Amino acid sequence: MISKETDPSVKIILSGLLLFVLGALVYWFLNSPVVKKQEVVEEIIPEFFDYGVVYDSIYCNSFFEFKIQLFKGHEIYYQTYNLVQKSLIKYDTVPLPPTLPTEVDTEVLLHIEPEFVDNVQDFLKKNSFSKDSSLIPNFNAYLKEKSKRELFGADYQLRISCHRLANESLLQHIAKYENLHHPNYGTAKTTLIDGISFREYHGIEQQQNFIMGMRTKNIITYVTELYGFVLFVDLFYETEEQKCLLLDMVDQLDFATKAATTI
View 1 (cartoon, rainbow, N blue to C red):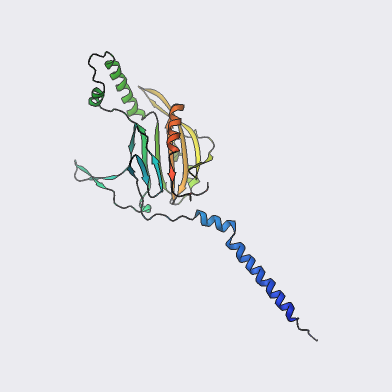
View 2: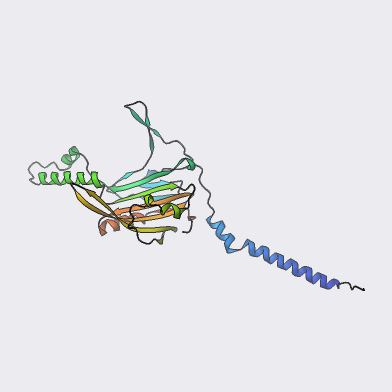
């Protein structure tokens, strides 16, 4: 059988086509939307966890890379010290040591609520008008408000907390009953807070006391995932005016990173 050699020009053309196809495949792979998406959501987890600090009425958290302006007329609570037991009856506080993210489970990072005069001396100092007959009813109203706050908490509150995801996903964690405040949550929707994607839940929380009766609070919960943690922003309120004030606070959230997981 006689074989014919392939024309050299054909070989060159075929080689060129092969190189073109391989080059096109490499270009497509490097510029593929899937690859780009993976590059966008890739996170570099900070080495140490941060409980946050306050500078000039601004709470800043370097781990989650956000800050929030604190409104006047509000009390804030955030963890800056560890409580250490020195003896059976004596306690002391020490600055928080550097903490690895893997050493953290669930933490309340920031709690905000309206200011309240919570002792008699301060009340009398701020209401020291001896000839004013309204002092007694004012004092009775103060005692009633103090009791209500001790039992049910402030009328409205904003709380930012986190939980480290170990062996579960974000949706698995928030699907658990104990991780949402009340089963009356409706269907979640997606909302953006300073470019970060959050799941938004609306619900109610009912508290009952034999003396004070029933109290109902509305709840808005925003949930996202950052650096292997679930980040919660919870709003508790009773009136639309309080809701608007809390939403104004949420608008002050400023995230340095925009790499939250799309949920």
